Image 1 (cartoon, rainbow, N blue to C red):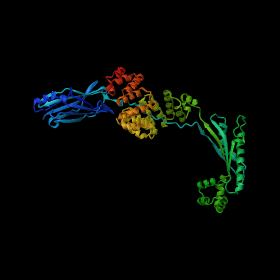
Image 2: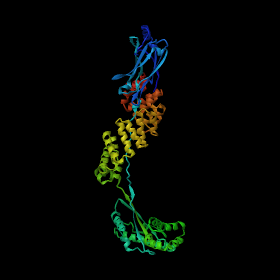
Image 3: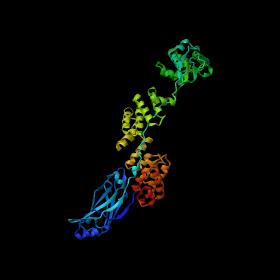
Image 4: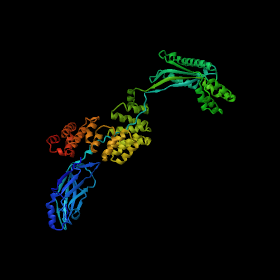
Length: 568
């Protein structure tokens, strides 16, 4: 709040006045009250970590005589000491009749300055004669409202890739002799078929596997007559299904019915597998590969394709040996879903036997509880077992940060950085550590590296408030609704938005939010709203009573009985 309070010098100017006569100095002292001073802003205000203000003055044309000097020194007085700032010297022959303007140097704010006063001290000098002027109090208190920023930076937890149900389908092929649909015994003894049978016998009764059905897709190679190929494909589908069913029927457990009835088989046929033929040709190293592919492109009619390909007699012989046998097949897929442990099982094992869980299960376990001590235990175990995964160290750091163990959190984030230096979450979290350590520049660099995630932008907004860049803070907070954005709006001159922003947030019932609404009301001159919100704030947090008493935001209310009744 910038109030231009014009006061007449009553006491306290350091003035050095060089007069052409001693009478000139005495006359100036007698008329010192005629010099009027303005302090801007008033009260003075802390911007970022520092304070700066300006003093301007007006005086009559006959007050100064030639060779008179007037030295003015602003002094900031506060509990625990005072700070004299750089003086300004006015010379009579240059200052005769008019005004001056002085900007103080920027100086660091100190905690005691919340209740500071600014006094202007002067000394006049004429030749060797000096006289002190009465001190003039120009300000009472310092606006330090930016200190209300909540340093509740948002850390970024790494997400798990845990999936409760994942496909665990098992697939194999049964190959056929040309123009036949009989399943040869050797086809049921292949290594892949044995592996599938082992999987079935091991997991068919498991609680973690759900066998959902069997898909059979049968094909004929495109080297016979189209009508015969259609029937051949159907026959292969039938024989392939029957062969697989026999494998399931070997399980004599009557409670196990999967794979033993036709209704569990979904059958499809392709009478001539031209697509499969094209795919195999594209993968082959045959000399006439491009020529055959050109034939497939030029002709869409199956009979014409066969004719053109068979005309390449030498090539066709190679096709018959290397390509076509792979197309005479039935593809068998056992459709299976693998189910995870239950949430209750994962939660229990994450504490009692974390070594039995995968990294994804452990990270997922961290989403199943809000107890910080339990989370600390889970992520420590995850990091111990899967330390090469940056997510484990990162998430442990986030929990340590929530437990206010800033130093330990920083070490965890550094470990995460070793394997996840490019991860936005790691940069964001390291930025928080730098911010809490007072290294604002380093923190901002890390936030910029992290990108534009909502957590990072929020953290940047906090830094901008602390740096005194309030408009930038409003932009960084974006769509976020809550105390910190409302504070940035207030400090950037938009007190009218504070109530709306807070009331639309989940922080509207917090003591500090009511306090901020009281400050906004004071800046708008709405004393009734000040009292209502300040009363609620103090009821929720009694420590705000003493804080409000010294708050220069309520300077105009210090003589108000209702206000003093609240804060005393």
